[in-house]
Length: 104
Image 1 (spheres, helix red, strand yellow):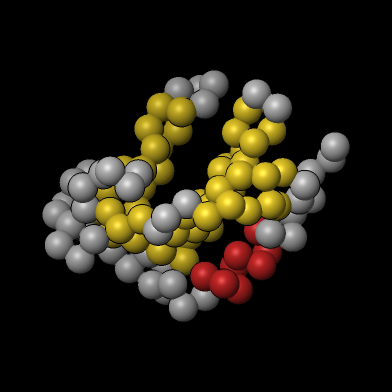
Image 2: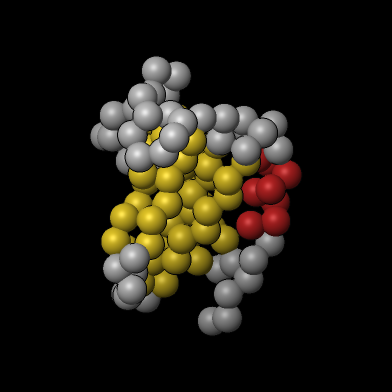
């Protein structure tokens, strides 16, 4: 994501959630992002991931996403928080995500 045009991505930070370790990043749309795949400025973040090959997720102007990518055996668990207030409630929402516990 950091290499994608029209995105501003924080440096990956180590994190532990519910007993799983991984990294977390915050993602925002760059100020000058054009209309890409939405009727408003926006960027597709993920496409075709997962067993169904049909997952699509994007970000539009005014949204901040916090994405946790956690190691789980040979898989990756992703937790995504989307704050459409521009980030003013991101920490509040993140406290819910980080309260998740995974069975060993």
